[in-house]
Length: 136
Image 1 (cartoon, one colour):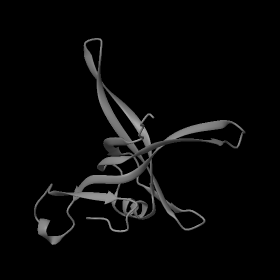
Image 2 (tube, helix red, strand yellow; image 1 turned 120 degrees about the vertical axis):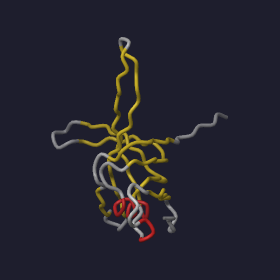
Image 3 (cartoon, one colour; image 1 turned 60 degrees about the horizontal axis):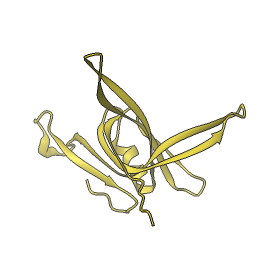
Image 4 (cartoon, one colour; image 1 turned 60 degrees about the vertical axis):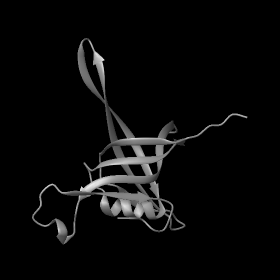
């Protein structure tokens, strides 16, 4: 028997504020873009290549991400890759790959009084799903 896993870790910048919606059954779902970069050598010169990813969060994780993440936030996303297809209005079949996030880690400015007067101080936050409790 072969063993396989679908686990991915992405580290990059949020490309747009998360968009929070609710399914007809009331489940929260948030989507946002994430850009990751890598350097490649091309003709004795290093170039940066950027890949854009579609991130999907569900339930409490979706609500927390929608409340706290903004465009430009540096994050680590842990999740799994899923592929799906849909038919466009013109009848054309479209394919999309998404990362279904299970946890999101990010750096953000502290919002409590302890950091008042200290510029560029940050704290690391973690969102995990699908648990009900999320550490801040």
